[in-house]
Image (cartoon, rainbow over all chains, first blue to last red; front, side, top):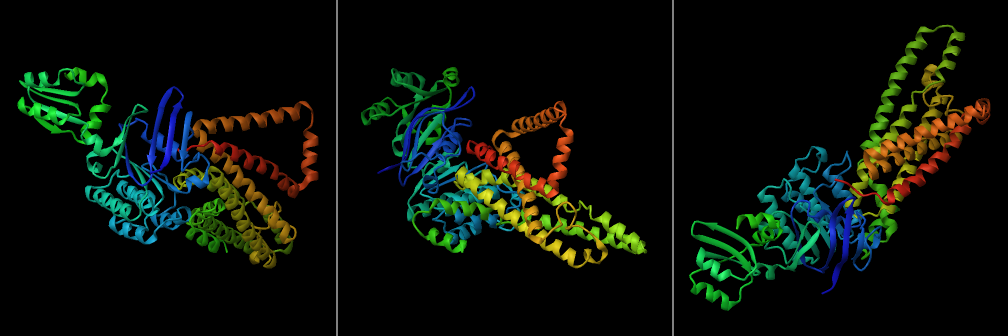
Length: 295
Length: 259
C-alpha cells in the first residue's frame, strides 16, 4: 500500500473564514474513498487544494509525492470532476469528448461512447442548453473514461435521476475492478454509495473528524432500543451519540459494543440495531447543542 | 505534424508537459464558431452592405472627377475596424470560460497561459493573412469594381503586402492581449478587479494628459504622431501589447477557478 495523497496540517483561510482547519490524512492507492460532510464543511475546498486549483494557507500537500500546485507531472495523473464545472460557451458534448483525450493519457474513447449511450447524452446539443442532469452526465463520463490514476468526483450526481445514478455506481465499480485506481467521491447521498466506499473521511467545519475504513465504521456504533429505565441503566457511563425518547421507550446510540456487552443487552430485554453510515455521519456532524436539547 | 507527436506521446506512459501547451491551443479551435466562423460571417455581412453602398454611390456619380473624389473619400473607411475590437471581446470571453474549463482538465496555469498566448498569435496571423489577401484582391479589382475601400483603408491597408500583413498582425495581437489582461484580472478578482483596473487606466491616462499639459508638450506630442506616422504608431502598440501579455501571466499565476 502506498499513499497517493499525503496531507499534513493543512489549513485554508478565506479572510476571517477558516475553510480547512489543520487537516491531516492520507489517501492510499487503488481504493474508493468517500469524502463526506455537510454543506460548507470544506469538502470542495479540500479537493481544490489537492488538485492545485487553490492555494493552501498552511501545511503541506503531496500528490504522487509532489506538490500539486503548477505541477504538470503530478496533475496529468489527476482528474477532478466538479459539480459546478464550467464549459466554453460554444461547446457541445462532442467537443468535450474530442478534447479530453489530449489531456488524459489513459482516455478510453470506446468506454466514453458506451457511457454516452448509457446516459442518453445528446452530443450535438450546446452544453448551455442541456438539463442539469445531462450536464452532470458529461462530468461523470469524463471522470470515468479518463481513467486518471487519481479521480475526484465532487457531488457528480446533481440532477441525475435514480436510474442514471445507479448506472454511474455500476460503471464505476465495473471499471474500477478492471482498471484499479484511486477514486475520491464527495457526496450527500451517503446511503446510496455506502456499499461502494472502502474508506470514509468525514469533514466538519474544516476539521477531519473521522478517517477510517468503511467496515470499521459500520460496526462503530449501535442503537439500543428498549424501555427508558433499561436503556438508561445499560448506557450509564457511556458516551451517548444520540438519544430519542418516546413515552416510556428510549432509543440511544452508543459506540462499539463487545460481544459480551451485546449479550448483556439482550439479557436486559434491549434491542440492538446497526447504525447506517449515513446515520453515523449525521450524528457526528450534528452540532452539540442540537442533540443535547433533545435528550 | 503536431497531431502525430501528440498521439505518439498519448500512447506512452507519461505525457511530457509541452504537449499540454499544444492541447490548450487546440482547445480554442475544437469548436471554431466563436473565434473563427462568427467573426468572418459578420465581416462578410459588412462587406456585402458596403458593396451595395458603393454600387449605389458609383451609379449616382457620373463624371470622372467626382468619381475620383468619391474614391478618395472611401479610402477613409473604418468598416473593417470592428473586427479588431470584436476579437478583443472574443479574447475576454474565451479566457473567462476556458480557464476554469482547463483547470478541470488538470492544466497548470503556466501551460494554460502559454497555450492561450500561442493560440492568440496563431489567430492574429490567420486573420492578418485573410485581411492581407482581401486587401490585395481589393487593389487588383480596383475596389471590387466600384473603387471601394474596406481592406485597403489609409490607416493600415497601404504599402506592399508584407507591410499590410505586419500591420494587421500587430493590431490583432494588440487587441487580443489587451483582452487577455482584462480577462485575467476578471478571472482572478472578478468585478472588483475590473473596477480597480478601469480606475487605474483612467487615472493613468488623466495623469499622462496632465503631465503633457503642464509641461506644454501638446505640440511635441502632435509632432510625434505626425512624424511617426500611422504605421509607426501601430508598431509602437507592441509596447502595451507586451506589457499586457507579461502582466497577464503574473495575474493568472495565482488565479483560482470560482463557481
